[in-house]
Length: 415
Image (tube, rainbow, N blue to C red; front, side, top):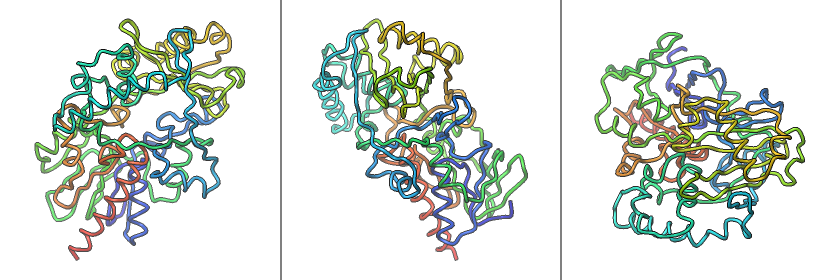
């Protein structure tokens, strides 16, 4: 805790990337992390099921632009592509050709969203597509909303949606959290260190923590917008009104893994395949990733309003919901093979206050405000700050790296 050049707050993907970059640039760095482990929302639990269970981030999105794909391969991790093998169901009946059967419907939606965005109308996906009459309407809204962004279609900015990148996904057999922790394993990190206040009124920055006060030249803040919106960290002087608005405008969604373990790893003939049940006026859709890595674990992911309701009811309700939904699709054998389950709860976690961030309708412009430094002493990094790789570990890593370079240039300029 000896007055380093830079203090990085948060040892998630962005904080780890920023710290590694700063060290390579020859600066003295301290990373402070409130949890007792590193990785942030990318964390692999090895104890609950005896096999790797990614409680948070699981997909290595945008493989062509994801640092962790070549890094994992170089370090000997088992990194392999997502085959995107999708089974689409209407109740218990599988529909031929999977996602391709609803591709025309999705194209209609994407065209309407793109049209609204091109006109500069930062409305919601729901409003931009309300004129569309299509039998797959509810299913597309489920896919674009709760299953991808953890929000309802009425809560997602069309301009923000249009800025998002696209690309192939990959998996790490040992767990994505294991991979991220490996990259950050040699960093100078103070765990169980909770930051309560940042005073930038003087020539240096004073950081108050439960383990004492640290003074530094520059702070890189990588906590979630949910934590910032809750004002869990006090700033002196207070941040500008527009800056504070960015914490609320780029808001956290609710996307949770409900994971089920089955007694026989071969309960499902395939592994890393998707099951999607179509939504309709009466029922929400559901998406599942079955037999992850052939381990017998299956994710039944919940998001949006349904996710919020289930999280409010507790873990047991989440597990019951997932079992019942899979049973509706695949039959009673699901319950016979079930061993135990668990559920993430990033929505109620005080270190995150949600899963990942997306712009509210009318707030897409606030992403750039969120990225801006304050007084050239407080810098912001994380998945919410990246202009196109938001909501991903790839975006968090890139954001941390870029901000570290920016901070070093400013510090050099001062000298």
